[in-house]
Image (cartoon, rainbow, N blue to C red; front, side, top):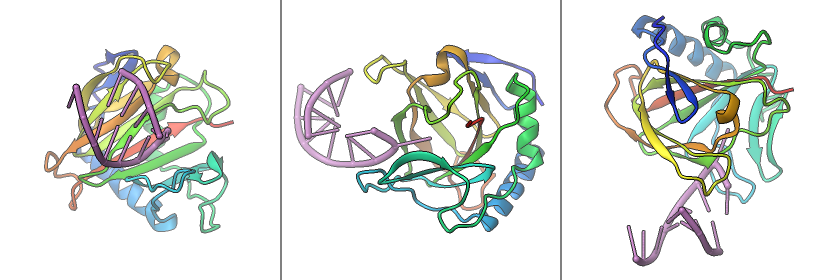
Amino acid sequence: MTPEKLEFRGVALYPGLLDRPAQEAMVAALRRVAEAAPMFHPESRFGKRMSVKMTSAGAFGWVSDRRGYRYERRHPSGVAWPPIPAEVLAVWQAVSGVERAPECCLVNYYSETARMGLHQDIDESDFAMPVVSISLGDDALFRVGGLERSDPTASTWLRSGDVCVLAGEARRAFHGIDRLKPGTSTLLPQGGRLNVTLRVVT
DNA sequence: TAGTAACA
DNA sequence: AGAC
């Protein structure tokens, strides 16, 4: 793992923390997660489908529907979420800086046209616990703002193998993904991007 | 509005 | 960036 650490608007960035073999191993593990807990398109509380597909691993999964955003013990189908893969836990241990283990491993799949609007991660109970994010596959334009939606934003490209940590001032910063750069990675045979986010929820 | 479209 |  490359130890280089950068900072972008308060977000810690570890470019290329995962080398190609590590990325491939993680994708294989995530494929097993998606077999146990199939990806689904969440719906916002106003009935609009999000463009990303998602599933989770761990004690809790993140769920969105007309009842709002929350963490649930089970996949919408009723099955328990599979365990968080060891490869993913190793990244948390390397960069989170906390002793607690993550309780939720949210896996988002971005097709070439998928995006994620500016939002805050505020469905957790302890904001002293960081959010760790792993990028796999095509490059993605990552936008980071401040604590209010109207705060100015700035963008940077995230590449396959990069890891971000949202902690401290940036823990509740607005952030999102504007677009992908299709064809920039050969990691995923069908293209697109996987993003893995790790959180302590309770 | 974890979304979108129109418009500047 | 703001409005819906």
